[in-house]
Length: 71
Image (cartoon, rainbow, N blue to C red; front, side, top):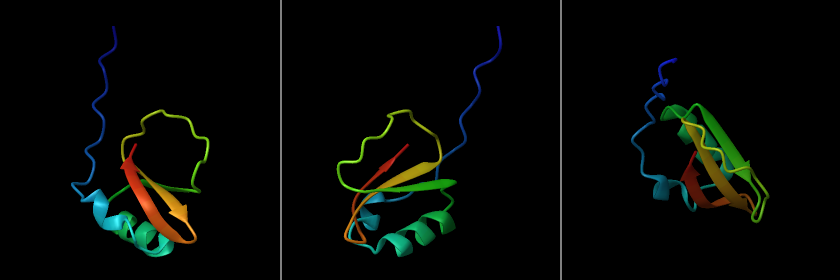
């Protein structure tokens, strides 16, 4: 049986700090802090719920981050 891979460590980051930022600024800040993937989504977007280590998700309304979560 193959060993279970160890997921990469994620940046230790305060996700609430992204809420209220302009989307472009939040994306740049997330990349600078080490997030490998940043996904910006409109409110109510239909998305798959698979967890991807190193990904940061933003819900963006009118160009501003209103919600942020990992995976």
